[in-house]
Length: 393
Image (cartoon, rainbow, N blue to C red; front, side, top):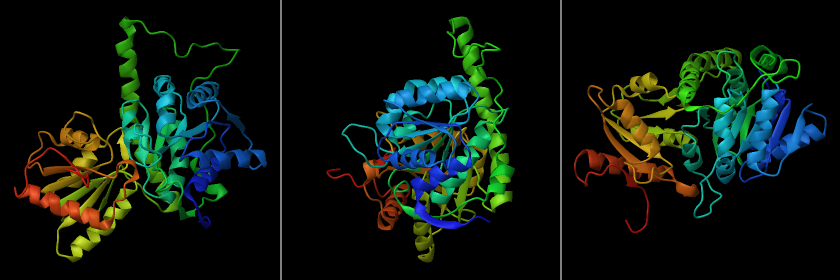
């Protein structure tokens, strides 16, 4: 096995990009992702990574450069956050429709306004439907592993789609954690040399990103959606192979003490590690509680989720974003759709919390559990969702 090193998660993510032997990094600095590309610039400058590092004038330009480089057949990486993603948004949609296998880390941060540099999932949810494969990482080791996994999946000839890794800003990006680095032979065994299906070359001209008239546009969108749905088999196979090499097996939906649990917390991202401690404490108090963590956001793991919650009576869904004017947070709305029509539907309570980095402690999650149980028993007013900890409500 590789060496286990205590390192800031952003720096270990950059080291994973180096191990993937990328050809190009194009990036623009924005908190809290900056340390990733800063370290990559050092690795390129110091000769540890033979790649082009292109500092651009904006995030829009960063993804535009990535699009051109990827279209030319190179392995490419970038990362961004929040307002940077918003500026990048136009090209984010374009590279998915062009089937360019770009790997990106999104250091999750609240979208303005008001202006905030702290973590929540509003930037994630703003591009839920952009056509990218999207996965959540809960800790530093998962971030490192999923960089290599990202290129493995995105560049598969049956996929050829961009992939985004969501990591919580500051909660992960700026924290020092123990990370087991891969050995060189492990990387070589797992990640093949990139062989593009189509690429720009003067000897064989092709058209990419052409104008689509109405008579062909719907068909083009279906042709984009189908490989995203079908990529799931490649995703699960890549996780299986990663586990065989490293001993760490990942799944579309991760569970903790859920088999006999009457009530399940549902989380995305780093909250999963905290809530697992909450589950342990509540179990010690005699409560029948478990945890389900959504790792694969797109394509969504419908069957795995239904299987994970099939024995539960209650679901407590934790959202870190608002669907303005909707019926709760984006994750809750998604899961209500998944469970619609199922026999023995569990009661669903939804809490929106932790916006812009507001602290959520073990005590807070235990309070949420108590609040959810009161709702289920009809002690409190029935509501579709609740903002947790908001003053004045």
